[in-house]
Amino acid sequence: RRSVCGRFMIKLIISKHVSFGPELEVAKTLIDSCILRWSDGANENLKALIDRAFQTDKTGQINTGRVLELRRINIENDDEWDRAMKAIAEAIRTTGTKQYIRFYQTGSDGGKTPISLDIANV
Image (cartoon, rainbow, N blue to C red; front, side, top):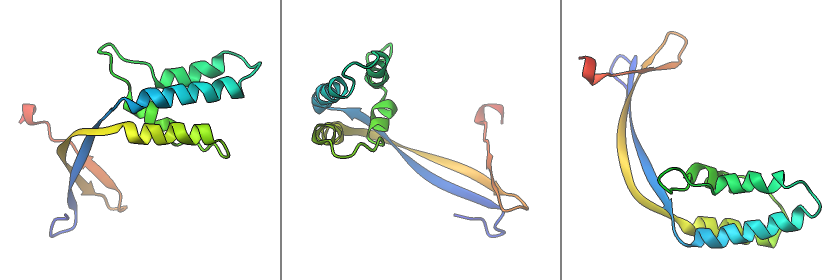
């Protein structure tokens, strides 16, 4: 929504919290099989790139962004990779949402500048 004068804008943003179900293990197994097939005789560092996507943090959680980034890789004509990407899609679970309100000011050049509201300093 924009203000009457058009200088200010408010956006309601809904952020989803995502986790993964047991299908993620199937995806990891399929991806590992692809890597073994593709990297026959190649450097082990290739496998390390994929393993990084499945690393857990200090609390044992997998970084959802890294795993979802694998789905953006366009690998054609490989049924096993396609099955792995489908398994990742099936593993995605929305565990909750959060709503945020963001404020922007429109500059003279038409660009939007975020307005930071630090309630603690008010």
